Length: 81
Image (cartoon, rainbow, N blue to C red; front, side, top):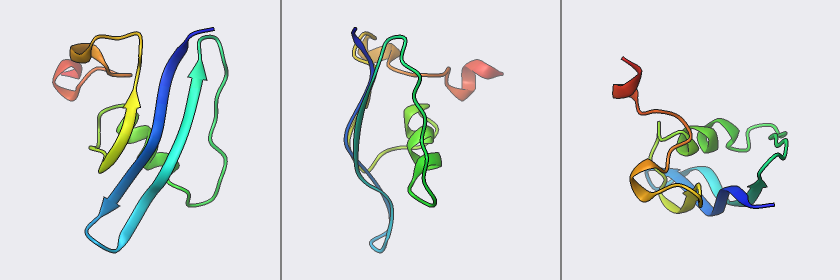
């Protein structure tokens, strides 16, 4: 099965002292059911980065089978209006 989401060494920080996501990596294959389970581990931040609602600090978060201009999981806000 092909990868439909690839997250590699994803980091998100706010300022110098607040680490929201610290190097998470995972792949989701086509047809796979995937979920996050944890307490205060950056789940919402990771989903916001994957849906382009928030910019990552470093790392990769992508959909390999999509072009660079359409590498989003959801439409941008301007398309939702």
